Amino acid sequence: MRVASICVLAPFLALATSGPVHAADILPALAPQPQPEESPEGWTFSFAPYFWMAGLEGDTASFGLPTVEIDQSFSDIIPDLDFGLMAAGEARYGRFSIFTDLQYSKVSTDSATPRGIFADKVDVKTSTFSGLLGAGYNVVDDSSARLDVIGGVKVWSADTEISFRGGILDGVSREDKETWVDGLVGLRGLYSFTPEWYVTGWGLVGAGEADLDWDLVGAIGYNINDRISALAGYRAMGVDYSNDGFTYDVIEHGPIIGVAIRF
Image 1 (cartoon, rainbow, N blue to C red):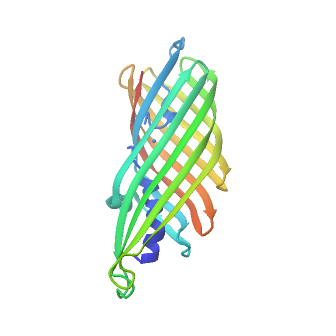
Image 2: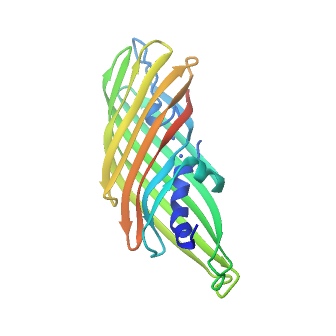
């Protein structure tokens, strides 16, 4: 891979593999469980670590380099992942809920430079974080179905460090950081076919410092018991952000699996 491609891709490879594993019941959207005839009084909570096998496609740029078109599958990304964590959670009281979805990853990669004149190798280290904090209001809630109207704030952060080894630039390093915030609104819901099996998902769309920010999830779940359920589904998430030579206009999508723990 060309040096320019590595410099641009590294910050964004992290997002596609970020942790948990990153949303999981699998996400806050997937945390709800089929409800009994009467909802329990007081607060209820759920925690959901998850694993998102996401690929990445779109246009990216950083360090003022030209925009690069990328199309990376999950198998292309995973070898460079140093650390990843994904998790979601929810607190619910009556018709009201507060939820979060957090993803963090750290990616390292390197490449030899053409002819080795300016440097023999280029090392790129990237840490990426995205965090959603939202609230919801329940508009449908019975023994088999739930529908919430939701809204929230999503924070994105990417930190990339590039270091040169050998050649004229030996020992030279540069760092490029970007942080931005978007507001999102949407729906999330659940429908129970039986006491054990249900489908769930959410849809969010918004903007802010990014021109567009959206997130879609659909999954099927199985209640192992009253407190634990397993889920499997598909997630697609996109964002279009650019500022001062930094561009992140990509879509991440792929299968997602997780476990929800309720208490």
